[in-house]
Length: 58
Image 1 (cartoon, helix red, strand yellow):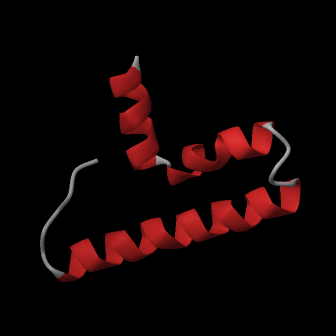
Image 2: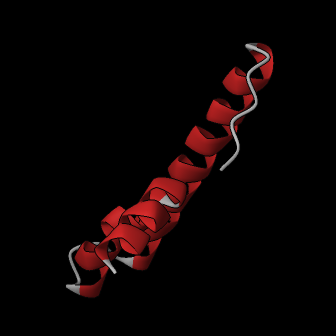
C-alpha cells in the first residue's frame, strides 16, 4: 500500500499537500495555487526531458 502511495506521490506531487488541506491548514485557494505550481513543475520536467532527448516513461 505504501509503495503505491509513494508512486502516486511521485506522479502527483499535490498528494504531499493533501493532509494539510484535510486538516484545514490550506484553504481552497492555497490548494489551487499548489496545484498550479505542481502542474508547472510537471510541464517543466517534460520540457527538460524532451530537450535532452531522453524519454522518461512514467
